[in-house]
Amino acid sequence: MVIKLVNGTELNPLSIYGGDREVQGAKRDTLYFVFHVEEGIETLDTLFTEENCETITITEDSGDSFIHSGYTIRVELSKKNMVIDRTENNEPIYEDRLTVAMAQRTPAENQIKEMENAMDTLLGV
Image (cartoon, rainbow, N blue to C red; front, side, top):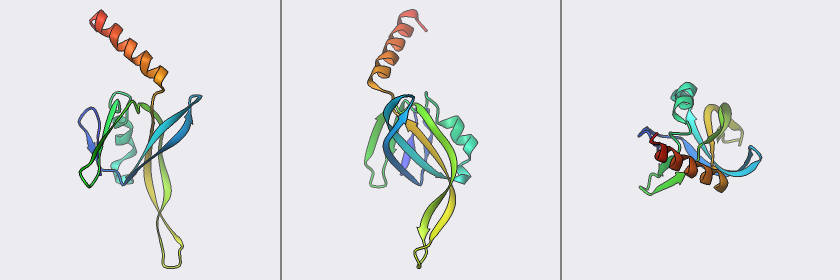
């Protein structure tokens, strides 16, 4: 699986999952990206910005691609000890992982963003 950010950076997360999350007083669709700790928390901090995540393209191993727009609110960047497997006795096996959670703007926030872009265009910014 590969994700591509607006700036052209391609990353290979271990997994991606989504769900609703309460963020800044609104229920938002949120994408969670899980990485090996070797990716570096500082690297992920510089990559997962509002500008870089305006559009996130996810390409699955099958070759299918999906574009996710407006996931620009970073709500989590953390290192967690996660269950990655189980032993024969069903005991959990843990490893450290880095997790980034990006929440989607609301429709009202999208309208505000569009108005800001229109004003920038009119002002020649």
